[in-house]
Amino acid sequence: MGILGFYLRKLYTIFKGEVLVLPSRVVVLLFFLVLIFLPVATQDPYILRILILTSIFAILAASWDLLSGFTGQMNFGHALFFGVGAYATALLNLHAHIPPWGSIPLGAFAAVLAGLIIGIPCLRLRGTYLALTTLAFPIILMGIIFAIPDITGGELGISGLDRLSGSRLSDYYITTVLMLGLCTIMWKITDSNTGIIFHAIREDEVAVRAAGINTTRYKLLAFCLSGFFAGISGGLYAHFMRIAGPSTLEVSMSFTVVIWGIFGGIVTIYGPVGAVFILFPLLEFMQFWPEYRMLMFAVIVLLILLYMPDGLLPWVRDKIETECPRCKIRNIATRKTCRICMAPLD
Amino acid sequence: MVLDIIISGLISGSIYALLSIGFSLIYGIARIVNLAHTAFFMVASYCIYQATHKLGFNPAFGMLTAVILVTLFGLISYKLFIDPIREHEAAVLIATIALAMAMQEVMLIIFSGDYLSVPSLINGYLKILGVKVFYQQMLTFGAALLVMVVLWALLMKTRLGLAIRSTAEDREVANLMGINESRVAMITMGISVGLAAFAGAVIVPLTTLSPFMWMHPLIMMLAVVVLGGLGSIKGSFCGAYILGFAEALVVFLIPMGAFLKGSVALSIMIIVLLIRPEGLFGVSFEEER
Image (tube, rainbow over all chains, first blue to last red; front, top):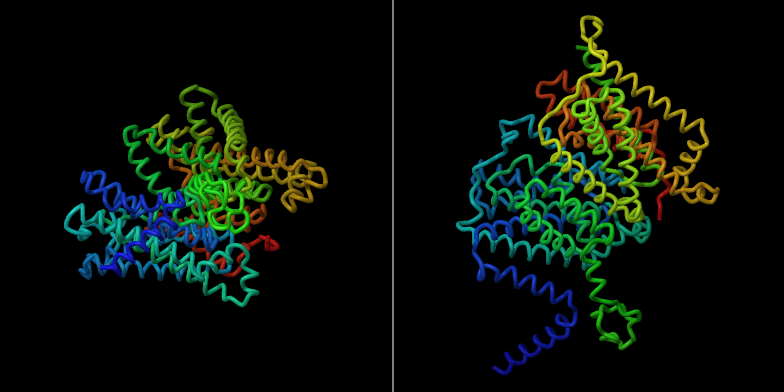
């Protein structure tokens, strides 16, 4: 009993000293708790549906940030991974009768393969060339899908997939928990040694190569990792909507992912996730004025960018937290001195 | 058949050339990837429809007003939305996408999503080897060529052209030589949007209007620019005709070709990039560090 009490007290101290001191960490904690306990408050199928789709797209947006934000390989065709994941999952489920828990990971591996295939030609390109070339891949695939309607269902897509699970509520828990888990994994990846190399490749690729790091391998790794997570989100989408159609490969899909990523703030992982959780429900809410929906969406994005070109969430974070000039530890903006080294904050 | 392919290739090639030269210019001068470029083309087409159908203008006069109005509109939106965030490359990208989406939605609200069409300037056709060649097609091709010649003269023979070319070469040095860089960027934006609007004006009698008509040309334009080399006018010109003819060949020769035309054109672009990563005529920039 005593040892349990000791660990509980230790946990509480860590919690108080590490989580409660920074408002951004409190917000993340609240975000987790709200998502997990939301069904206690409401089980409205419409709200759950919106949140399920939001979670699925949050995985997609975060995976875009892993590739384009962290590694700096500006990808304008992220719908390719999403679409390949969705189509592979659908084909496996429909023809090989693999249940969702098997078809989604296999679909994700198909997306990894797609990442390798487009990663290899893209290795030689950088910057705007890369962005514009990657835009082409989903369109090429879409042309192929339209050209062989016997296998891919053409314009109608592949329908009649298995449900993700028995009920809306368990669907909700599967997608939300997966989203929280995968985004935490992505965030951890960007914090690891690999993540630091990704950062360095974005900042100065020549210098990284000069330091004896095989940048080719790391760039391909970034493509594969991003493809994997995006493929999972594509598979979840296919099983939740029970259809994998060409809309998953559309140009507007790729652009939407980029909008989420940059709106929320790139090189953060939490930025794109937050952006999806703000923009997607907002777009649904605007169903009340269906004609003006997309117009208002575009105007909001334009106005926010005008005042916060680095993205919404980093801007908010900079307002509520300041960085200690001496030890580079973040502090809440209301403090006068740093919480670690007691240096005065300005 | 052969003549069909040639006509179709020449026409779509000229349109892509007009669009991608404008896009290349503004990218070369200001490093702005203006994804709203073809949306201006779409807005210009709708302006012409409005002027000729609703207001009863003479078609040629309607086109002129449309080009001027859209150019002004482009300059205003540049000043309001793109200029303040020019230093943030990523933000410019989605600002221009959002701008294009906003234009699409406004057109959707005003004109609804129906397909509309505009009558041609001159009717009638000429028979060459048993194939009908409409005068309007010849006019489109001729006008596109004429504008490209005028643009070439502007860039190569005038002081303004010299300023534009030197800014494209090296922005900082051009600034030191006393060229007002932001004004050159503004003028180039005007020229670029004007070219897009003009492309809309010449193509509008040959096609149907819909608020989503900017998507396909945007993709093709990006492919052309990448194929020819970013910022290179000559490259855009050649790339446009290469992809225009590729599209025409696929549509006429392969069954289900209409679905594959985009795929084939983009595959050509990727193959060229594999061999020459900086495009056909692109200069490989010294890596900016």
